[in-house]
Image (cartoon, rainbow, N blue to C red):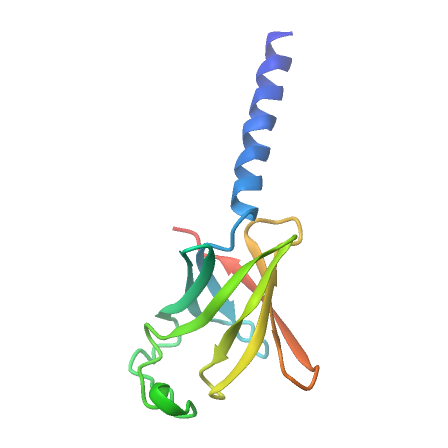
Length: 144
């Protein structure tokens, strides 16, 4: 009886922790090159009021001095390390959307939707082009 009660308590605490992680995209996320499967960068997603933004926290390819050569306007020539690439996503049901994501390799900005699919250590990130085309990436929570 006592071990069953402890087990139930453990499951309850575990599910509360998982639920809390899935209530927000906040955290450090490794991006992966779709062609090679290699980790490319770490993106830090953080709260900004009731929305979320994100920036490049680490470049894992050894190119820490890379700049956004394809960007336009005030972002042209800015260092990619530290660059804000996610702006203004907000909770909408089971996902976060309404913001944008910048692809510094192309200098292009896309509408953004992110969500979990059961695993709090896997974030699905979808950039949508105005033409209706989209690309979805799988980001993994960076382990400390």
